[in-house]
Length: 124
Image (tube, rainbow, N blue to C red):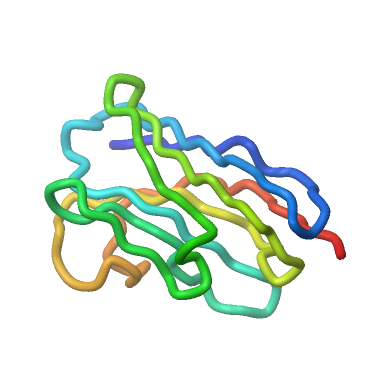
């Protein structure tokens, strides 16, 4: 089993920045890829950014140019740097990991492990 723990959420004004962290523990050698998802009230969970094979990165259109995903393997930690935040970025952000690198990076059903989420609130 893998445990994921997010941190770094909070409240920020529009235009501000925030960095989320996700520490993985347990059977981390079984992890093939990790990514970030978010879910706003009344909306479906959507992919934000993720790592693919060979360190490639994938971003949702809304995240391109504003968000950056990174990782520190020595610390089993995944990061999401978010800049130029807007009220529409308000959501619960989740860290996710999967054992197999198959299918679309943004398909949340393909991820095996999830964190509890960290709330990000952006005020105008």
